[in-house]
Length: 354
Ligand code: NAD
Image (cartoon, rainbow, N blue to C red; front, side, top):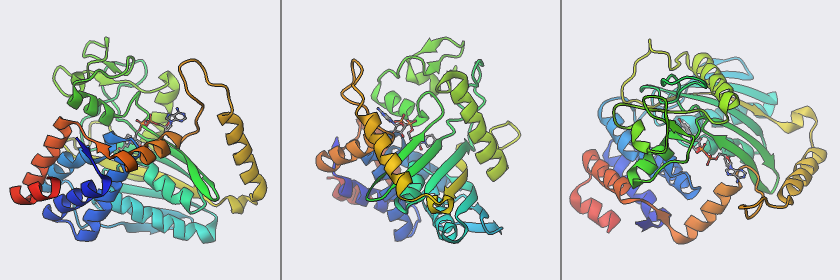
């Protein structure tokens, strides 16, 4: 199906209100998820709703939790998310960092115990749109690992996202926002839902043999997702695990910690005011000229043009604002079942989706 973003956001808001969230919290989570779909990341959009509703119902996700400052050392903050919606506590933690960076020039903020933060680029864009550089190291725990270390066969890590953002006055910031696995697990889920293969080189089966069959991630005997970029992507994933997980969260994917169906993110975030380094017009000129230089490259065979990080998301957003958001039948059925489980009546669901 294809659905307009505002209708979808209204349906999602009603699901989370029915599940116990306040109108404001439900709206913020819905807007974040739908924005991820608009930006082309169906892996981190409304397809997550069944998992969120299940985690509300089993007590993993606290719908009324907000960011709580545990330590305040001026430019260094430690914030606890209380297992609240990551979309809310992550935004609140970023608000706190942005307020502080105005006086300190740089902020390092640890944010621990967030239920799924969703699309990490959302927090990067929050910083970039306010004129700041940001870097985010994130790990993912609360459930069994899915990603094998470089050179290994078993799952020992998760999809550990990394994000880095450069602001541009009057323009969208440059946003590098990515899983450190070969592809995001949610993209394997979307392929599984659609019955489509995943790109070669991303998955191995339980014997370590490369496969494009997404079901090896969801049915026993389990295979594993590999890191992107061989040992280099693996190395970045390890740093996300140690900086986001060990340092900010004190909770890595090692097996002493609880593993159920929870989705917990810990994030270490650096926010920098370019002006604190004396950067002004020359910095922005360099960014503009370098981006133009990159984009002016002659396309390689099979490519239409060269883009910079964040551009595919802008293009997807423009297209999906105009045409609506495509949702495959399996994902849609899962969302409708979650709406029912959250407590929306069949009549409400029909009225909101009909
Ligand atoms: P992706 O591979 O689609 O894109 C990664 C980055 O590459 C983006 O910054 C994008 O703008 C850039 N890019 C893509 N194509 C490009 C091109 N042709 N030229 C230049 N730049 C290009 O993203 P992904 O790795 O599938 O991650 C998807 C989302 O999943 C991200 O938003 C990430 O934050 C999220 N994620 C979240 C979690 C979590 O636990 N919360 C875990 C993993 C991933």
